[in-house]
Length: 295
Image (cartoon, rainbow, N blue to C red; front, side, top):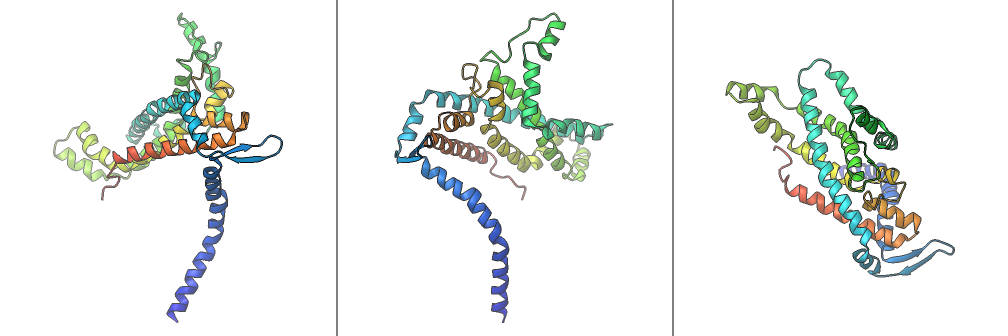
């Protein structure tokens, strides 16, 4: 009797899980399997659809494709600058808002506004700021300083996108840090004060260790998001990755091969390389956060 009841409960559980498993299988697992398989094919989509097995030729092309290495260099540079910057800025903002200052509720709303604004809208706003006749150059002209072609200089264009994304994404991580800060027991700080600990010692010995799991999460999400930079780069360069390939990223390059040149097999091979790169980067930073819990 008990065995029949357990079987019935198990079947009921699987019945509830089945719709979700079907959706995950169709919209997640199946596309991944198709992407892996088709990366070994030469896919022709113009005219008659054709699939020709290419073996490892798509991956060999990656080694000899100069634009791949340019895009990879730009993407890695972007990740190495944006992820630490937005993490540190988010922590500083969270510490500021966690302090008992007047108007902190208003500041929370104001700081969080960029996160709830469309990425495309933010990009257009910053393009107007960086424009030759935009806000930044008008401000420099008002101060009597020389103006600059911010969007046309290959040395500056990607850094402009970095500044925009740091400003736009840090508030989201700020909220995560703020929630974690409010979970730290106040008694720990009181005990440290009794022992004569300074503000810096409290931060270094209490706050940072408690924030370690949250920092691991923030950096992981930051790495994944920054490696997938596309829309800002696309809008800034009108889809070309210019000027002089300075804003070309891996995802933008995948888009160009897939939808401009209709070279789907090669684009999928690049996608697998991107996924592998993200996985390796995540595992590396996971190595430095071995103890992501305080247990």
